[in-house]
Length: 130
Image (tube, rainbow, N blue to C red; front, top):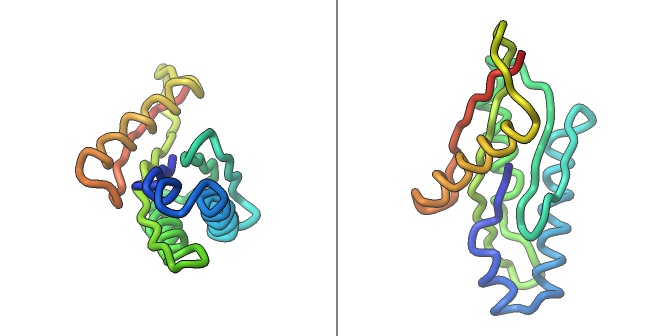
């Protein structure tokens, strides 16, 4: 999950049209960062979810690449977009149970931990699926 930090201030200062353009830019950058192997969805407001397979040894670099892709200034007035990101990894463990709802809830909790630490952070939540 990715939540654009301080998005309300963009809408308040520059208007909803500029905020919408910024969200389109963020979505395009996310799509570019994950390539053909990932799926990017905007879940509402300024929140996005990325689903993609990642080798365990590459997950940290993948998260950094995604974060960097959307942390560059965006907008006609060089608005600096700072992003707080929650990233979750699902793995298979026998006899463990998990659902998509649980995965999203775990990711959402991790995202809010990142925001409580001041935003522009990465927080991890691991959900084990059977």
